[in-house]
Amino acid sequence: MNIRRPSHDSTKTADKSQGKPSPHTRATQGSEATNRKLTELEQRLLSLKRDFDMYFNGFDKLPPLDTFERIKRDVRGLTNDNYATAILQFKVTNFISRFNQFRSLWERHLQQFEVGQFKVGRKVSLVGGRPRSSPDAVDE
Image (cartoon, rainbow, N blue to C red; front, side, top):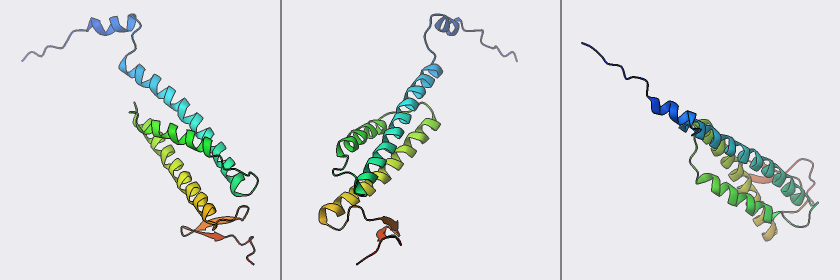
């Protein structure tokens, strides 16, 4: 039995010599762009966390809702994309999960503040899913 092996395909080398990116190269370029976007969003999320901490501790008078909405819009854009590698998909999913945790915490605190149950400047720690005063806070 004689098995024929395919000869070298000249179209593959022609594509590379003409400067067309291979599918692997396109995936890598897309990954680099998404990695940069994800890094920038992580920095913005940390800055937003500091801003909300400043607001909830009474140092700022207004919550950073405009920044919050911009980041929320950008995160929504991340969920609609397809990613080139599983590693990138994992990073994006991890970031979205972390953002959603912060979002639910901030929205719950904002709602408690509107109702009058959350006191600005009062130290609060979450224990068992319920806000409880920390040992430093003195109840009267």
